[in-house]
Length: 133
Image (cartoon, rainbow, N blue to C red; front, side, top):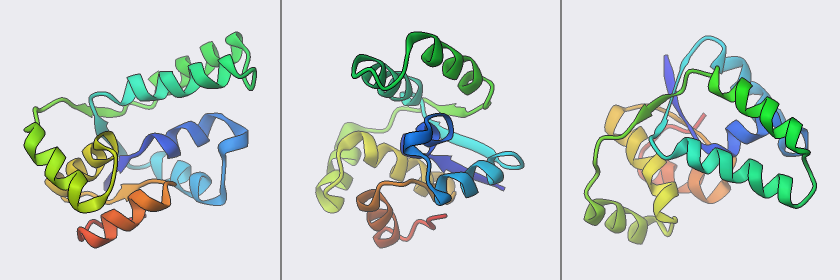
């Protein structure tokens, strides 16, 4: 099987302070399932790491090591254009930020479950009929 990987889960796999029992369960699933994300996921992931580095929660060499390991995850990136009006309408309905809506839209489009630690995103996915892991 496969699932859509939200950045909140991916970061938790590499940053102990973000890890939860849920993220650890998703890590085990990721060993045998394919991972999917919107094409902007590397930007969001790198920005999260940069923010942690700037706040001195991670050192530069730690961030560099995380990036190398994250690149090995083999996340399938989806860059198909989704009309802005679709994302905006979904965001209006769900109350999500547009970039979070992109994860939800991807899960809907491919009929994949969503892995996310963000409670608001998880609730919006359930309301939209998207299975949440």
